[in-house]
Image 1 (cartoon, one colour):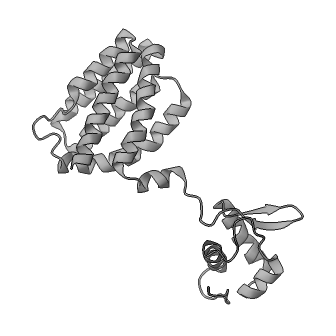
Image 2 (tube, rainbow, N blue to C red):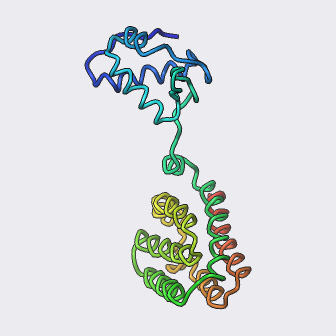
Image 3 (cartoon, rainbow, N blue to C red):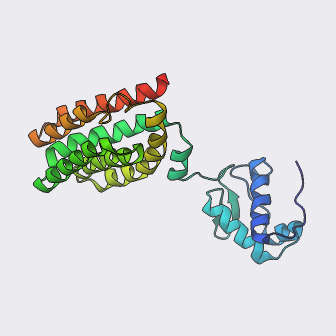
Length: 230
């Protein structure tokens, strides 16, 4: 394990943060252990106490350390916490689809019970737009597809579900725009999946939560299975 050393050139706070993070990740200070005081760290790093203070604040923001009033700074994790959007971007699409299915199927069930006339009008419009996008390029088609799913989630009237799907949507779009072409999903049918989406919308109109959940689960599982097969 290399010792801490004097810093130079690039922003000192960034360097101090990086060196302290490396030492924590390497286990120099174990989880639950106490870091040396600001004076000692400043001396080892060759910087002022204010630089050390800012570096510790950055590490606290990353979930790696915690300051305890009157006791000092303690290690809480060996690695920085990864936020939800970053975790989604790094995840395999098949795994994202598994979680997406859990979120959206329940949203569809709720939407069938809670939808208003305005919600039904919105999903009808989104379905028509998706159908029209069959004549457009893959990016426009994927955008129309996601817009329909967004309208269904919105009809559930649960802001937490709205927020969850909003996190999924950019990741889904990024991958699906590429995969629609690579997997040839529209090669035989430019309106790929229209019938199942129309069935979903009809289930919402009938107020049938079980059918809405079943149709959407089957549609998403078909896509997930295609991803795994290819």
